[in-house]
Structures are given as structure tokens and as C-alpha cells.
Length: 426
View 1 (cartoon, rainbow, N blue to C red):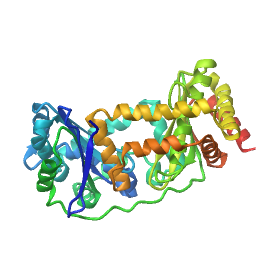
View 2: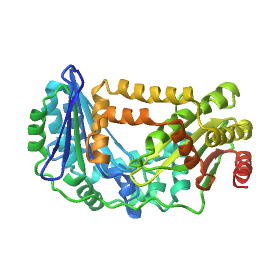
View 3: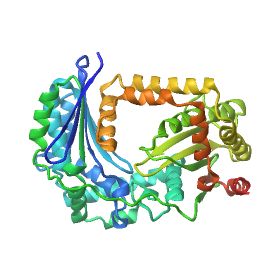
View 4: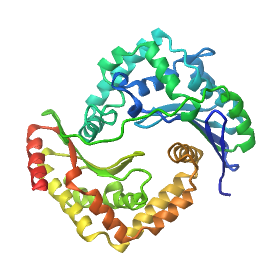
């Protein structure tokens, strides 16, 4: 039996999507705010992530320990995450405990105490998180490539976690102000999926969050360009070089986004992709190579990630250049196109068999499109993409004028990359 979805818009601006899956024993639900790191001012660098941490530290009626105990004693789990354009808090547990579980999450979302002692304690925790990122090249590379693409002064170019200096400057009044601005009805989406009844969920949710102020959406700075498009972190102690190449791509509303999705699959999303087969399997130049799409409301990126011995970098870059040129000039085969379609649709349908993925799908589509999008509509659009569409997407995507890079490794790696970039621009 396929899930059935219903949508409600509450008077205070909250958007509610419920996905009934009566054959399941569980329920997954999330509270989402349309506010992430790109909604921060320069003084607030790291604030969205810090607020996410602070919301788990207690409310007037529950301590941090009691929040965890109440959730886990009901057989459920809870977590949260912050990204560039939104923050989410999620619970999964037995469906018959939904009302009690939702009461805890709604309390956490709406009523943080923000005790001064807890603020200072959590600053120390996030300092450790910042240090951990610097110790893990793959995570540090994410920060470097964002800085290269957007510039260090743009919110999208700054790290989500903030810096030790920005954390030190946070005061309780700053944290409270950001929470009040971001966690309001106009920015909030609630998604619920599982063995629930729509009307019962609506009654519970509307009673619990009816008093949330409506507020207003938070403006953000559009994505622009940066004059210095390459970043390098020298580390002679690394046995591998870690490289990211980034090209500008379409935003999440662009009608050609389905072609770009399939292009990314063919390029480097899975083990059948050209990058994986040519660079890793056939030439044995690396252990890890992949590509990924990043989509925002006003901009997008197609990025390639590579980790390999510094001595293999030159040959790997030549292999990447050959693959990109072939996709631009010759497009893809009918077999590649059909296999990529089957992969995207098949993986999406498999993932949507569980309540967590249905909750995520409903939450993200409501957040980004202000509506629930039937997955089968997306699958139909995927099926309509032609090989000509893929070739056009490749011609647009692999424009050397938009190419940015980030590299962690020895100085010799920078020289190799610099020579390759020079050849690309000649």
C-alpha cells in the first residue's frame, strides 16, 4: 500500500506534512527551520550550529539529561544537524508514543533555557569539534573548497562550525536573538511519517505549536564570485593529497536539474561511474574518487573529490580532464543513460521504504518548494531526460571559467595542480 500524504498550513505559518504508512510500527518526525549558516551575519559565524547544540541543553521543564532520558525511555532516538540553508531536529520511535515524543521535541525546539554555564560548556565542546575537523583532511577540504568557491567573507564560504574567535564572542543575548529570529512559524516545517493518522497528528501538532510566533523569513546574501578561486593547505606529513574541484551548477529550481543529476551519476556518484572506473579501477591511481551535486535556492555546484598519493596526482588530473572533455564533446551512450536512470529511481524508491526517508523527503520538499512533491513525479522527470540533455548539461557544467579548487598535501602537489590549472585556462 503506497503512503498517503496530506499538508496543512497553520495560521502562524508552520507547514505540516504527514505521510501515513499504516504497515509500519514506527514513526519518524522532524522539526525544520529555514535557517542555517548562510543566514548568519559576520558576527554570528557559527551561530546556527551553536543554537542547534544549545537546544539539546534543556528547557524550563526538562534538563538535558531528562530530554535524552524521556526520548530513549520511550524506545526512540533523537538527533539534529545544521547545514548551509536549514537546521533540523529529528526523532524516530514507536508510533504509539508519538504524542509524548513530539511534546519533547517541540519543547526543545521552542523553549531553550540558554543557561550561561551550559553556553560556556558547549563552546568547549564545539572547539573540540573544530579541532577535529582540522585533523581530518576530508572534512577540512569541505571548508577549503567552500571558501574557494564563495570567498571567505561570504556566509557560504565560512565554516558551519564557526571559529574559536567567533565562538568566544557569543553572548546569551546574541544566541537568544538568533533563536527568536530563526525559530518562528514562518521558517518552520514539521514532517511526520509512519503508522499515524493525519487528523490525530494535526490535532497534536497544532495544540503544541499554536503559540509559536509567526515571525518572518530570514534574508540571505546571494551566492557570488570570488577573485581568488583556489585554496591550498600545505601538509608534508600527509601520505595522501586531498583534492576538490568545483564547477558552478544550476540551482535546485532549474528545469534542467534532472539532467545534471544524471550527469553527476555518470561522472562519479557510484562505482559504475566514469571517474571510479577510469581513475580507480583501471588505472589504480587512488582509493577514493567521487563527484557530488550541491544545490541551493539560488546557486549550485558540481564537485569532484579525490584522495591519492601525491605522485599520482598529475596522471589523475589528466584522466579527469579527458573524462570531462569527452562528456562535453561526445555526451553519453544510451546504455549509460538508461543505467543511470535506473540507479537514481531504484535507489530513491528503496530508500523511501522506511519512515525516516519519507519524513526527510516530506520535510525537504516542504522546506525548499513549499509543497510536497510526489517522488513518482520526480522519477517521471528523470525518465524524460535525453542524451542531448546530458550533453547540454555537461557543456554548461564543465566550464573552466567557473572552476575552483582546494588541495591539502605537500608543496609538490600544489605545483602539479597549478600546472594543470594553467593548462586548463590556456
